[in-house]
Image 1: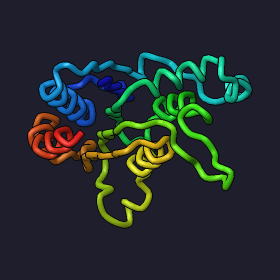
Image 2: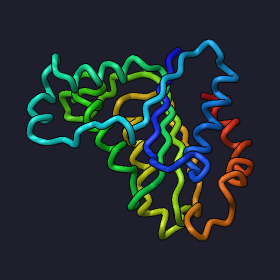
Image 3: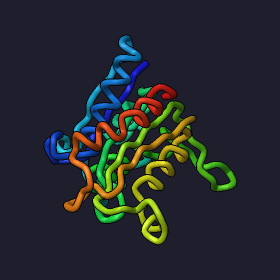
Length: 195
């Protein structure tokens, strides 16, 4: 079993709720599954291009670098993705990465009816953090980070999607990073146990 652990946050771990919760999840997963291979991908140190005319011209080429990256992504069985919500969605580094690996006829295809059919099995956990409290309407209606990641998981055909999103972790945060970890520990462990 292979797990890809993806982070998209330039903060140091002790200053980041999402990274701290992600590390907690990864640590617990490794304890439960010591024989599984876990690889890390830090999108703040690896650069993936935003889609442009050059990358789009290679989008359908099965021998392109995009196709190679997509096949590497598909070789994993599980994905743990950790990111803060910035400007109502995921960081652009994560979006750029997903844009370059989620290509037609590798991770999904269009049916004759024009709908998406996922070609990638597996499971995903998304762990996020939001500066403000977007857990209730009207703010919850325009927090797109978790909705976007769930949509990606469904589009590529993952069998399971789970998420834990910490709200109100911003400058007026009610808890320290360590307190957030303690607060979320049970929920993270339960989520990872069923992963």
